[in-house]
Image (cartoon, rainbow, N blue to C red; front, side, top):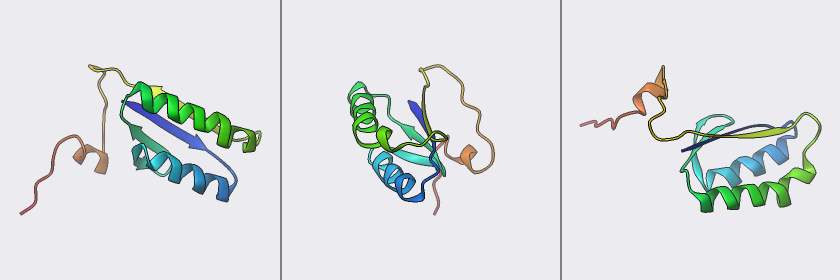
Length: 90
């Protein structure tokens, strides 16, 4: 999986970026997304960032993408802990 996180000052740009990223992954926290580790997704996302968003970024804006390989342990606490397994409610 990929973890994408961003810090974008401009409210309007941040909102558009968030909507764009939601097409490819799910939100874990306000500016942190979990995305399926797919070369196609990565190529599309990086291309879109470069062509649609990067030229609008200010000096304080950043986007980081982390790759989590199979077998790496992810520690989860709080509500995120429940997302590790399926929760069935009756």
